[in-house]
Amino acid sequence: MFESENIILPESLSGTHSLEKIKLSAFLRPETVVVGLNGQSKQAVIDELITAMDHAGLLLDRSQVREAVIERERKLSTGLGHGIAVPHGKTTGVDRLVGAFGIHRTGIPFDAADGAPAKLFFMLISPKNI
View 1 (cartoon, one colour):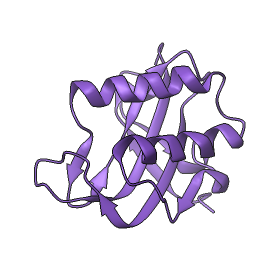
View 2: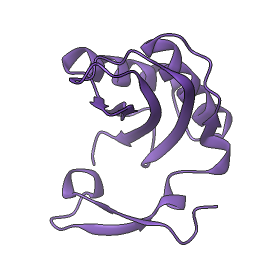
View 3: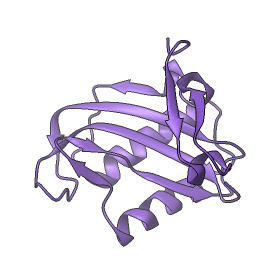
């Protein structure tokens, strides 16, 4: 599904001192793509994406992952605007970079600067050492 798609990660995610090209398939799987998110709140959508990663066997500790993402949201919303949100966190609840992608048909408030509801969600969870 994502075999030929590459993205560039900054050193803060790749763990190197330069930009690194990696394949989306390295951390995003078809089973972690959720079309038709149902949650009606920020926390509900976060939980749906975490559930997808958990069911795919990508999490060591679901509760630690959830805590890391919610704590990050408390510091500053990851609603980027224009209908996009990138909830993320660092935790010992994973042993490598993992991700999930979701689409919400109507969108939900995600505290973006432009006030637009988020419809596209790209969640990234990384180990604390990255």
